[in-house]
Image (cartoon, rainbow, N blue to C red; front, side):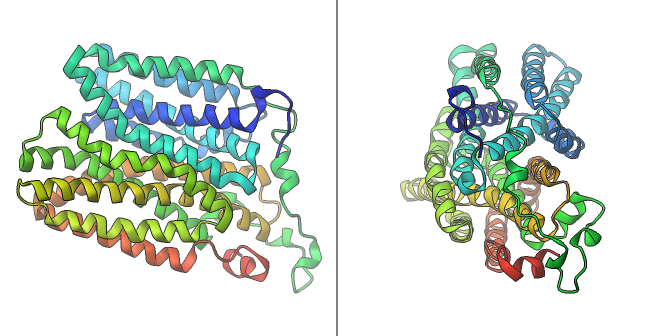
Amino acid sequence: MRSSASWQSSPIFVIVVVCVAVFTDIFLYGLNVPVLPFALEERTGLMFAGWTGDQACKKTRQLPFLAGMLIAGGATLLFSLSRSLGGVLIAGVLQGLSTPLIFTIGYSLLLDTVGNGRIGRALGFTSMSLSLGLFTGPIVGGFNYDFAGYFAVFGPAFALIILEVGLRLLLQPTADEHSSLISSRPVSNANDDPNGLSTAQHQPASSLVTLLHSPCFAVAMVGMALLNTFMTAFESVLPIYRHEVFGYTPKQIAVVFLANTLPMVFSPVSGALVDRIESFGPALAGFALAGPSMMLLALIQTNNFINSLLLRILLFLFGSSVSLTMPAMTAEISLATEAVEHAHPGISSRGAYSQAYGLSNAAFAGRTLAGPLYAGYMREWFGWKLMVISSGALGLAMAGLVCGYTGEGRNGEAVQRRDL
């Protein structure tokens, strides 16, 4: 972990910069309610996730990180001024370009700064920022539109972009920013192989392929994608369903979303727990809680006080599950990557981490299409009950995968058996 006397390169300041960037990017997405540009912007980012992972290996991250925020600002400006579908789609494409830059480079910078020993706590703060941005975007946008009109919706967005650009300009990288990961990686010699062969002879051609062959890493990616799919699925379907059942106005719907959002402020606590006991416990508890909380939403069919109260309780429990699982899954990506590098020393020691966060960004982007489509078509074809029950079943199935592959096989011989 790097050390510096300057507050501009301190771990706390780096965490603040990355958290504001993550919150801003997701908050901007939350303001763009139409489904088409919403799906398009994130799917566009899929094509650039791998490239961004490579850019995170360059000597400086300042320019691409700033470029991501400036592109997001330009996309927001274009979206606010557009009066045609074409302009809205172009704005969506531009925002999709900004997402991999902000997420991949931001997470790589975070890992460089705090190291693996405290990555869980740091990712707890970024997970809180992501979750809050996801759900507060529609809330703030809805209130601003009702009280102040269309252009007022974008005021907070521009303020956040200006704030983040200023923070990133203040951030001063140190000389050992890029050497910290290399020095912290264990390096094996030729005698590590039981047959006496150098491990370099067994290196795969690509760190990307090696990562995808790791069951621990693959399960972490699936968990991250599935968790975010649930979040966007509910965000797209719940407002409509609550309006149909309870007759809620947009402002009332925004208030109900608070039940889902408030537990997510405890994500840093979950992140600290991950640092102490690793990711298995929080991940298992989170997915085990997410399953029943989603399934029980099938009971809400009529407009009465009991159902209204039950809705808020279940949304609170679902938000709690997100606060448990998000830091655990994000940290698991880092820890599983460390296990792969331990088993395969020399797979471009920094590049593997950058590719890992590039892939996690791709998983994050893919869920923005899968979540609304899955929830929308399931509810349209099979009804509300089957939609929430099937979502809960997926959560419980993920808990089973967590039992098999999360938080294990990262020490001694188990690492080599699992990840070679």
